[in-house]
Length: 177
Image 1 (cartoon, rainbow, N blue to C red):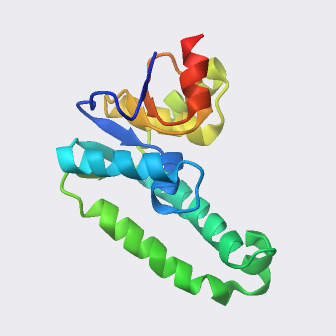
Image 2 (image 1 turned 30 degrees about the vertical axis):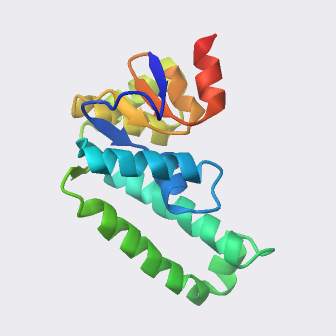
């Protein structure tokens, strides 16, 4: 496994994890600035990007939750969703814009979860003790023969075959040990 910061030479191909996407799009996110800077660096260099519908699904939820709790504090996302779901409508427009912006980039390829990904995901869960979503991300990457990922999620450190690009200092420190 290799772990690089966002100043490292760019990979030949890259998978975007939802943690990376959430940080790119939510200005108040912990890693917004370095993730957004890396996003624009990748865009300018036209690095081929694999974007899965699973990553979009997760990013949508993350962004809905973060934006809702930011706008309607002290209410939680679930309180707003259950009691006043209409308040989410403006955020759904933001999600559509975000998704359109990503999916129309010429260097981004959107892929679906392969019907056979479950077997690789289960094996990964057993071997690396990953949660199901992270195991499915790896399965999608594996099927598409891509090993580089942009993420801030420390759980991906459990997959030895990955090359990780991150701004998360905790991940960079853990890998140096």
